[in-house]
Image (cartoon, rainbow, N blue to C red; front, side):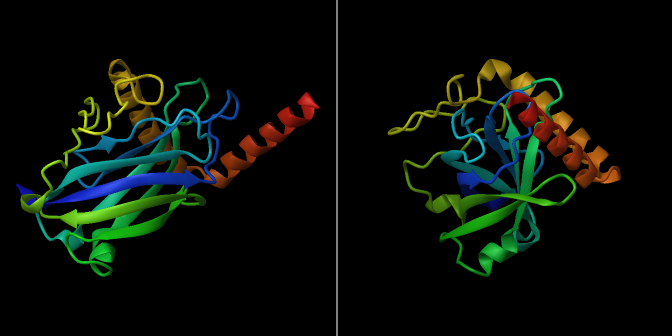
Length: 216
């Protein structure tokens, strides 16, 4: 049974991201957000921001049953492309809801700068978010609930989400590929738990440096 509360998170922007797509070009990052892993939501893709993306997109997700303070917000920043040899998971961040409640009351907004980490746990990048734990019974009439991850975003009264467009959003027809990317990201995460990520990162950095020298 779901909690009576819901969680509103605005994914504002990120910076200092690792370009996991360096072999093929720039990043096309988007964020996947969840508290309950059975209910994931995603932002649109930023096709232009590269390693410093800007989304400013608000997602609303229900909280699972149980004490609010026992739950954790999870955010994965993922590259939308499927280029060969590219590891789609850019970085992950977590926010314990107890830390939100220690700072603000239910219904009040908190701003956080979250540290993104690579699958190995090494810090890589920053993510700016705004979060609110709220009671939907007191939700403003024009507020909207984000659909589950993989479904097209509804159109707001004043602003139309581009989740259904290929320009700056995820195409509905590409959902299968994106879900495959997430599955691959999880597999990579598990693999890098056993193989030191710093070794893999050094190999990538050395290859990038060699490529840069060859272009000179």
